[in-house]
Amino acid sequence: MTCLRNLRIRNAAIAATLFAILLSPLAVTRADQRRDKDAVPNMAAFPDPAGVIRTFNLGGAIDLSGPFFQTLGTNGRSCGTCHTPGDGMSVSAAHIQDRFESSRGFDPIFNSVDGTNCDHGIDTSTRAGRAAASSLLRTRGLIRVALAVPVTRDFEIVSVSNPYGCGETDTISTYRRPLPATNLRFLSAVMFDGRESSVQGGTTPILFSNYPQSLMGDLQHQANDATLGHAQGMAPGLSVAQQQAIVEFEMGLFSAQAEDRGAGELTAQDGQGGPRALSKQFFYIGTNDPVGLDPNNPVPLKFNTKVFDLFDAWQNSHEPRRRSIARGQMLFNTRTFTITGVAGLNGATFSNGVTGPATIVSTCGICHDTPNVGDHSVGAPLDIGVADPPGGNNVLNTSYLPVVTVCQRPSLTVCVRTTDPGRALITGSFADVGKFKGPILRGLSARAPYFHNGSARNLLDVLDFYNSRFQIGFTEQEKADLVAFLSSL
Ligand code: HEC
Ligand code: HEC
Image (cartoon, rainbow, N blue to C red):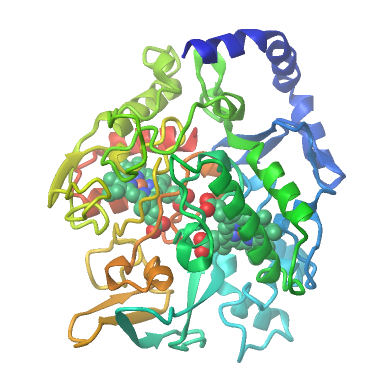
């Protein structure tokens, strides 16, 4: 804390100047106008549904001619095709639809390698054909991620019912949201299923003992895979120098909501919102680990449910919207509910030998424990039910997704139906069906829809899901406060 304060004082002069520039409405316009040129100025303002998101790059202005934004493959795509500063380094479904309209479906994001619902048996010769072929990308922001079923496994894929074709049972077409390529310094696993941080894929699990080398190595591997896959690059792919340049860029980027339409600057009145404060956030693997998942973590477990403290100073603000954001933060930190049936948590055996109780009374933070960031501070793939097909307890509409039936070997009598087998497609373990990592909870407003499959169209949908899944009993006011808080991250 002291350390943080010192830094703040040292930067006070710079901050004051910047603050003055940023407060002027002209700064917003100028940043917007420069978006398509060679650089995005540091802290450029990008409007989003809740206000303004900004990205702070430790290396200065974002160089749009750097390798992250170059077309390093063969299909006209760059990393920036799906990870753009204006969308918190992800891409919102609304902006994808805009891109479809303005390019009539010819923007490289719609390439049929993975920008269409299936890569064969589609007609993209007409505008209507292209619209239909990319319906999941346009409406839910979903990229098709085709994953080979691992050879070593304790399950069989018994059937795939995919309304778009691509129903093969040896390669499963999953549909996933682009994760933000920012704030990556805080990652404990790369990709929703952690596949770029897994021995099975030739990458390294991220632990206290090998961080940050493991993370940076994983990100290099990921950059190469993305070039060969999404961008259809030629083997062997990127040079080591290109991989390193991309990772260096990614590790220095911080994005967060910076202005809220109702509350104004999220740094006003001692608020700690925005990407600058985030860039100074202290972190190590297992920082606030609630259950001891990393056996190498030498720091004794001391889970503090108070995961966020950004808006503490707003509790008694005279501005109603600021008080609402502070109340939402308080709910996130303190509201307890009963967590049951979460594979990877309840009944799971952790690396320190402890078994997770069948019911756990805790807060949002038990799974979103990294202070002021909100992902898991240790790799923790969990099944909270987001991939469940329609018809069960899932209040989210997942009817637009394929249904995969997975049965346990050898008897094949125990089966589950899922819209995405998740981590099981990496580990080959039946116990991992439906498990995903919790993403970083910063910059949310710029990147709707939410969850790996885009099934929550907005943050209210997210809360309705949790309210039903864990019988929390949020009131309408509590939901509104939580939405105000989450939108300000
Ligand atoms: C066609 C769209 C697309 C392109 C192009 C693309 N990505 Fe991604 N990116 C995705 C999707 C989808 C995911 C999540 C996939 C998953 O988890 O299975 C993702 C995930 C990531 C992640 C993981 C973040 C996390 O929290 O785990 C990083 C880092 C990343 N991309 C960087 C890159 C880089 C670097 C490039 C260029 C070399 C690139 N991406 C190109 C769509 C894209
Ligand atoms: C039992 C663990 C657990 C609890 C408790 C939990 N989450 Fe999550 N959260 C996750 C996981 C896992 C994901 C990713 C799920 C997916 O995409 O399949 C997630 C995803 C999210 C997302 C979507 C992020 C994105 O980029 O799409 C939001 C927002 C979120 N959680 C907020 C909350 C809030 C608010 C609470 C408390 C009401 C909460 N979570 C409680 C595990 C949990």
